[in-house]
Image 1 (cartoon, rainbow over the protein chains, first blue to last red):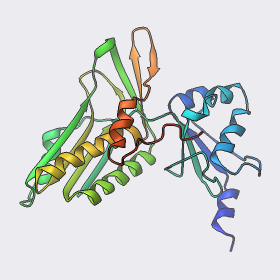
Image 2 (image 1 turned 90 degrees about the horizontal axis):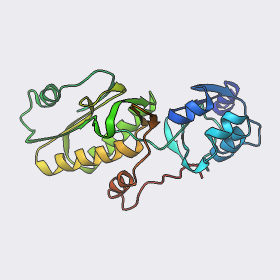
Image 3 (image 1 turned 180 degrees about the vertical axis):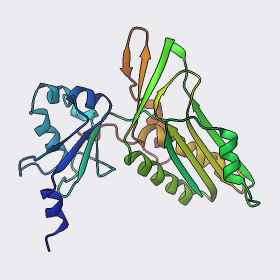
Length: 95
Length: 157
C-alpha cells in the first residue's frame, strides 16, 4: 500500500488565495506541481513570485503574506510535503 | 455547549442568549460582545471575505482553548460574511458560566483572537475608494496579552 504522502502528491497540490492576494494573482485557486526542490512554504512563495507579473506583485512583500496548510496556520519554514491545500492571504482583519 | 456559525444572515442577541440558557439552572452569568459596522470616514459599506472550512476550524480551536482556560458552561460565536452597511451586526460572542469572571474573560479572549487569527478580511467601500483594511498593531497587542507576547505578523519571512 502506498504511503498517504505519495497519494496526496499524486492527487496534486491546491493553492487557494484570499483578499488582495487573490485579487493580485487574478484567480481564487489553482492546482500546481512545484519542482521537487521546493520543500517549504517560504520556497513555494519564492517559486510562485517567479511565475509572472501578477504573482510577483502578489508576493512582492513576502513578509506580510500569511500561509495555512490544510486549514492550519503555518510559518515559512513549514514543510509542504503531503499538503492537500495551501492558502496564502494577508494579515487577518475579522472581528 | 459550543455553537459556531458563519453566515450571511443577521443574528439576534436575545435569541442566542435564550438558546444558550434555556432549561439550564447552573448558569449564573452570561456575557456578550457584539461587533457592529461603523460608518465613520464616510464608509458606505464593507465586504467580509472568509476562508470556508478554516474559519470554522480556527474559531473552534479558540473556543476549545477558552473552555480549557475557564470553567465555561456555554459559548456561541457567530461571524457574518458578505456585504454589510453601517449599523449592521458583524460578530457575536456569547459566553456562559456559573460566575461573571470567566464569562467576561472568555468573551474578551475570544474577540482578541477573532481579530488576529480567524481568517476573515474586511474591504471598505467609500465614495472615492475601495480598499482592504490594514491590520492594527493594537489588535496584535490585545491578543498578545493572553500569551505574554504578540503573535507574529511576519509569518512568511
